[in-house]
Image 1 (tube, helix red, strand yellow):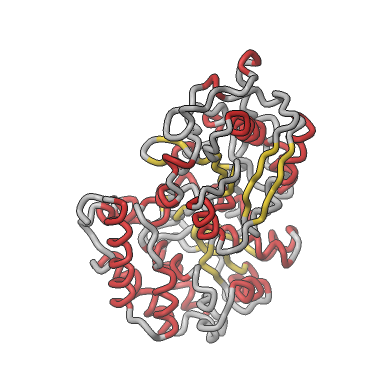
Image 2 (tube, rainbow, N blue to C red):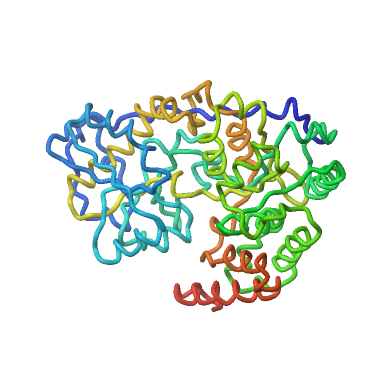
Length: 445
């Protein structure tokens, strides 16, 4: 059944049990000699209010996450006497951090994409503190506890905000103008709606090929059903490749939609900023994007306008299945610095953030709560609630499930610019993936 646009916004308010403190008798900083690469015992999680006078923590953040932890840091300083410094690392964030860590330069905490491939890229087993036994893990709602942040069964990342979901942000006014009264229930229905929009003189989709990075969402959502059927396990084992029919077919389908005029005329030069303006200015009806796109929309107008104008629906070939792709703004990792007290303080900071400080955090940043018992603030836009509601029925992206993350988006942007065919995109991606997998020592490569 299609869902009525008028009723589609009834979404889950993810909520949180404030994770409890550990036993006050264990408040002193524990010995962290086994912190890297080993299980963190429950007694090694200090009480949230343990005094930390004279201890300074450094948190690395990207440009789009540098303000996320500010309120938590201030509260933690007042509670414990610690000093928390948030340092903005310039883009490209992930590459900059990997370079710094490789030279031995480490913070105490950092925002980081909590996927297996990116935890591997950070050499988590050597460089990060394991977070097993954390007092807040059991408070996550739904399937969030096991969705991400794990590498080979060990937890290395703390999820703090809703994982990004690849799906469609749509302009409600343009849908109404074209006579579309329900959101599509599967891929074919979405294309039927696109035909209806085209017939009404409305551009169905808007893409930002100049900035490149979002091009891959169009391929990945088409792979959602295959991902649920073990696609990425087969790719990881070199039993299926990017040049085989499933992935290559998705690339070819994307190219056909572009060639057939479903996208904006300036697709080759359009940017992320253009994409945000396009949906709000009625220049296009739909955008395939992730949560950071909605952040761009929030920077352009108020929540009331967004609730009135913009909706979200997940999409897959067979239904409304989202593809989750947690990014660096969603999670935090703690580094194994070798300083016992700072390591313990970092764990304590995470316990406070996802414990007694969590309600204040979600209220301050106006985001959906991820845990049972803490309400999402009333001001959270409905589209973000729709994104959160799609998580329990979602499947992992390439970044979440594959052992390596090749530059598919770059090659797809090359295709849009006319310098690669779909076959060449698949071949280049497969070659790079195989090189990464071989470097990891993966079997079959």
